[in-house]
Length: 355
Ligand SMILES: *Cc1c(COP(=O)(O)O)cnc(C)c1O
Ligand code: SF4
Image (tube, rainbow, N blue to C red):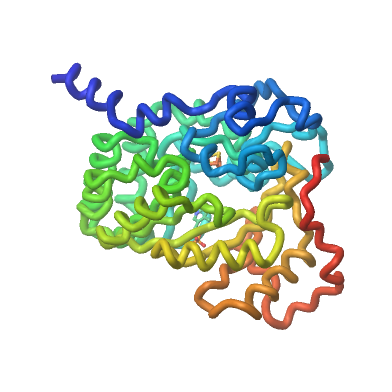
């Protein structure tokens, strides 16, 4: 029995797709008709946070373009090793709010569980890129702890599965977790923060959808898309499957220099998300994590971009521009309607450059 389950686990199409991902930079560049000489700033051997890119995601990049906005998100650069003041290993002080075993109780009524440390892609700007997932103990122990902790706190109405990427758990693990969370009477909503519908759309199977809607909890899935080019045909189909199953779909993006720091791109992203049944939720200002400073967009520029979006889109397609401030009681909004930005629009660096 055990063997049969292990086999099924390993031969799931999405597991195979994951196993075929690019883990070295040269074959990825080669698939795009590029080589190291096209990108002098490249770090060909990133040690601490390795290169990881699913083939399907790479296939959405423009061949021959070293400035491609999807490539930019996963391309290791030497500048990541630079020490920039204010950029830290743990930018959100998560170690200080971690109540043990990866359950973060930072905001009222919500608990966030680092369900697994694994991801299907390594985004260079990730705020948890230095997170020591190993110290959280085994996945089983972590899940057991979270279920017990949430069960004895009636103020918690929503559980957020995060990571890593919680959909990297296999169906059995995820199904068992959701079933046990669903049995907690005061818990109302199940939220999943994931990038897999866009970076590994084959993960979104009918059986996964059944697990997500299979408890008494109202299911919400917050996907992570930064650029409209990430929403190819397969991602669209994956999101449609989730919608058909009755799951509320939202998106969060990170504002990234050289990727999505112009209002036309952000406009197209919102429109494309809507076509895929997904509403924009958050546009995050970059968390100051060591190694990601080259992605930073200034606040006045960010505010300008948002004004541009407000001028062109219906209100429900304008994401909330926010920054996470350690110790604050919620994500902090930037650029309200009355916010004045003093920076002229032409000071917003939208052109890509290699630092
Ligand atoms: C972002 C976050 C949440 C969710 O915040 P919302 O504003 O409800 O989306 C909850 N817990 C933690 C630890 C978070 O970082
Ligand atoms: S998928 Fe999310 S958690 Fe994983 S590397 Fe990317 S941003 Fe970080």
